[in-house]
Image (cartoon, rainbow, N blue to C red):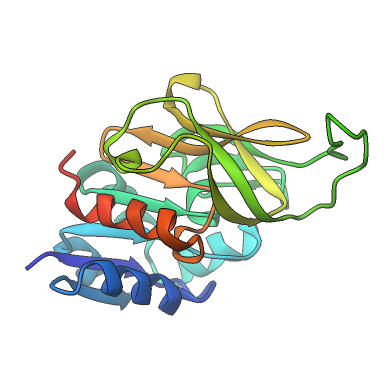
Length: 211
């Protein structure tokens, strides 16, 4: 039985992620846990979350999960969601705060984005459905059409130092990286658990993925 551990560091509604994974993989053992021992023994890791980078990093450290998450990102099929994507990078403008440094690059705030067609100023946070252009082939995109729409809620976005890790882009005023892939890591800015059929398909692909 595949054991999927959703890392709980006290930020965000993790139950919706667990429910979505349980729906597409009823035979899997899905566990929401803040215990490093559960992360170590898991077959697959999901690293979601919502909130501000400084708060998320503080809560992660309070639960002594930092080194465990870094190790898991190096050794197991690993899916980051929303702030779980941003925390993988070196630094965030949000609170001028360091991240985990698993990936090189930074997290920046949307700076007065403007609709390129109408010229209208776009609201921050970026909230709602938007398309994702698949910039690299990957098993987690299997069965998902290019430019499929997913659900976003965020004010910050990642800027990888190595453009080769970008697996998906979304336009909000200008294109930004909305999915990354490297080795056993796949991480997305959008919320697959809130993205209807396409999101469930991505989660199902993650369960079947053998990096």
